[in-house]
Figure 1 (cartoon, rainbow, N blue to C red):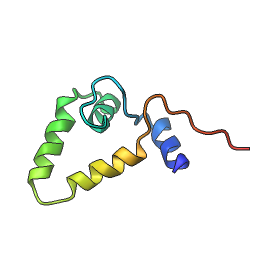
Figure 2 (tube, rainbow, N blue to C red):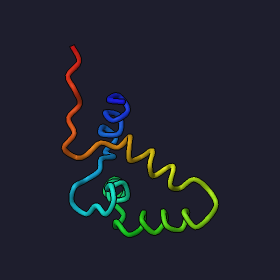
Figure 3 (tube, rainbow, N blue to C red):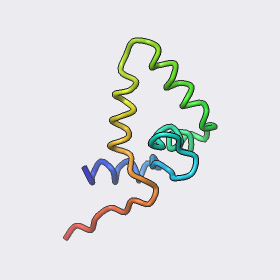
Length: 76
């Protein structure tokens, strides 16, 4: 799991502490794409209303995206 979180962190997808509502996934996606935070939140709400797995995607991103203070462990 650390390798996945490292890859997300290198790509700039981290969950910030400022501006988060639930887990910070939408705020992190907004920071990475340069959009205002309301845009990913609106897309998530719209996708939740439609049939699909928007909440599963959100949960997967919650698990994979590290916090902004996360530091990858040192491998020896």
